[in-house]
Image (cartoon, rainbow, N blue to C red):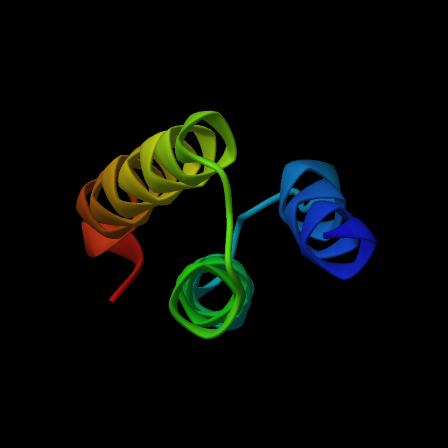
Length: 75
């Protein structure tokens, strides 16, 4: 989970101004989300932890869509 948090921190630190910046942000968000989904699928989690991770995954999905919409003018 520390690695996922590090990926999300990298995205927050980005100053998206170019298409490459936008692509990097979306890539990092997708990578973090895939990591969360793998953790959910590959480990035995209690329901509270599972629900928290699923909520975080949904939030990341929304951020990916927002990043794509906001960056549309860059593409």
